[in-house]
Image (cartoon, rainbow, N blue to C red; front, top):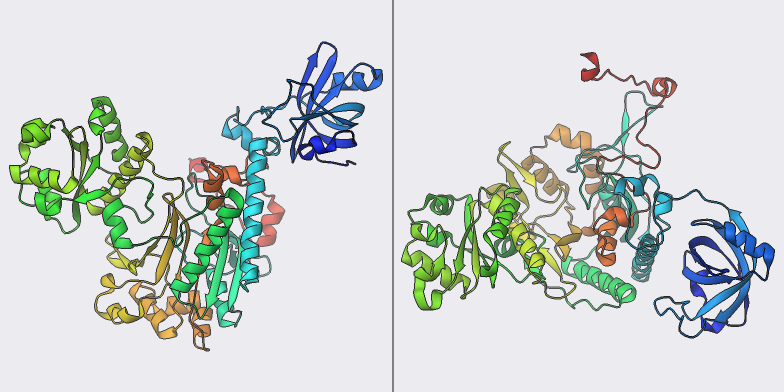
Length: 596
């Protein structure tokens, strides 16, 4: 139907007759001459229609926003002074000779001639097919397609096989609730949608596939937030006979290639590596944003002996932590701003936010410090704080004191918030690897061990004995790739011996009977010569979100769900009729509130 896309026209097409198809982006009537900005997937072009062709002009007068048109015309230079440097087609326009209205449109509920959405997210999701017409959204999905193509190409070049794994599978505990699918042919039994292809990709390594990847759909029935969805896409990768160092180097090069080809950005080579315990100590997070040049400074040894229970209590508690966070030039903050930050850390469980303003330490010593807590601290403690933080006149020091988990979460979040609020970010992209994770974390509520990653992660070979003697001290062969404070990929070398896997299951309070019931097929496969193997999975949605500057992964997915896991476009989930339920052997119970 067309000879060219709108956005591809330029001065090289001057004099050519072209046929274009697209939507009316804008229509303007200037003194008897009609200008239509015609839009398609590739961009915009200005079409000029004058009254010399009466029938064509009449149809142009009928056109409104989002009408679908077919236009034939001649490409000509724009008159001097009307060139639009912001458009690839800005040097030319099309003089329309023929115009056909292919379809009319009601007035759209979303303004489409702007990069900024004027409608609420609810309206955007309900009319997603309109929202996706916006140039900003089209550009994001184009970027996503390009990212996926480059990732596939890189892995193909490295000898990886693209292999699909089942969507209908067995329910196995992987950290989130499964989406269950009732089986009609096996009444009373259920499939589960995969939370990830984890076990199948391990089985592929046991099948001798050696290098596997898949752009995989995954499903998790969990509470949502900006970077989570009930169904999402990950780039899933597994290899045999490769160390973690070799695998990490391979994945680094892949991500560097994507950023170079898509954003023309050079990422560092190599990525820095940071042990888990160091990341938690310095940044309060295992996914630190290295663009923020602020760090948490431990003060526990300085505070253990002070007569100030707010600090002394956590300092003397093995599970507690006391830290300082120095904000250069933070003395400029008003009391109102400090109160806002106090409310902010409260979101993460902090009971308050102590601070010291360093007004004139260099000349007046402790008399040059402004804070309600100074009177509770000894000279030695204050001297230690100032020396350890390196605070200068005009700075502000925030303090966190509580259980280590609360301090890490609250002060780690405050560190990032201050970095953004105060314009302290250094560099655009700061990737790193976080390594040397603990194998287990202790679940105090249930008095048992839990896997920090998942139960198939291998321990360090030299620490296998710690599984028996001191599981809490055992480190895993896991690694996470972090970018600007977001984990974009995570993986590990897997357990490839049946005896070790059973030992880990036992530590996780999974009985022999439960292990056979849930993972019997994996345990059996491990007994038939399973090779050493490992892998990684990248969150494709999250990666594209970061690369496009979107604030939510919903903005880089074609048809996302809401925060309550609903599709406003199709009104899913929705009831099904009684016949379908009967076929599946299911019956709905009345809701408790309906029975009252």
